[in-house]
Length: 138
Image (cartoon, rainbow, N blue to C red; front, top):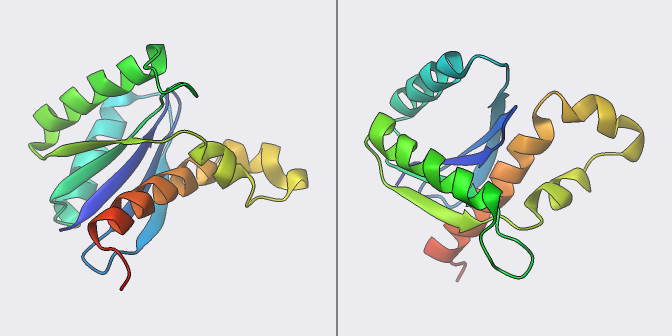
């Protein structure tokens, strides 16, 4: 299993990669305003890494309900299935961005946010959670 983790957002798509070793590692986020370029880069990455599964963050509300952002992620998951022809696993991503931000010094947070580093760290956290459930430690 070779998984691509995605923290989907309107401006940035945070990315992470993990395989049968069960360890998720961050990849550079896809940024920019041209959706066609993001899709082309995502397809190239999936081919290059021979991805077998996509793990997409599902931004549920704190009470577990699905709001507008979750519905948007579900539509994105459908497009991922169509464009990449791969299974897409939706994973609860509540607080992953908050957890990712906690790893950045407060003085650098504003500068780092636009780079997509936080988004890719959030993708790494959600992918690691998924891999941990698939490959629990002995």
